[in-house]
Image 1 (cartoon, rainbow, N blue to C red):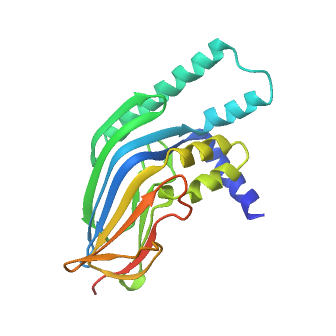
Image 2 (tube, one colour):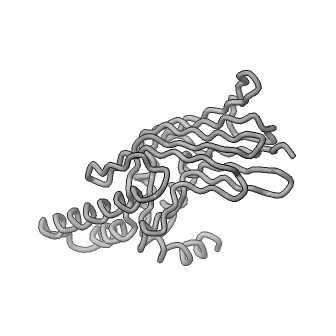
Length: 226
């Protein structure tokens, strides 16, 4: 029941938008007890076009597209991805956005600030980007919740389960290859890395490896200083 409802709500958005997925990357999130933070992502990002995926699936069920149709779809996808790179480049924090073709981008992004509101990345209104890689949620009582949904296979599996979306889910899962590090001096209430946190001076470091075999997305709950 829930899966069908989610499909009805999300499918129109997915078909009209671009779903970004990580490839090879290094990402670091630093959260301090005084609520200051810094985030960086350096590496590959792939643009998955929901509309193109649904068209490909429809073609599988009917006649195969002609060479001319295939060429046009590739050209349209490249045009859309170049526009996506241009849209992202205008956003503060992007040091480099390079489109390499075939849906592949190289991105160097860094941002810092104070956690007096939620932080999502990537999120861009012009590019209509959905499914942020990392979300930091500020809750009452000085609690901060971190979830890097795209660095596990939870998002990919949910996409694969959706009608007309299996191609996107499979691509998101197969390309995942990176390291996500959480660096904090805040109190750790909970986290889901089985190796736990290592301590360096007065800081705690948690390192998650993201691979096609990673099932759960990196998550942690921290308590800030009052």
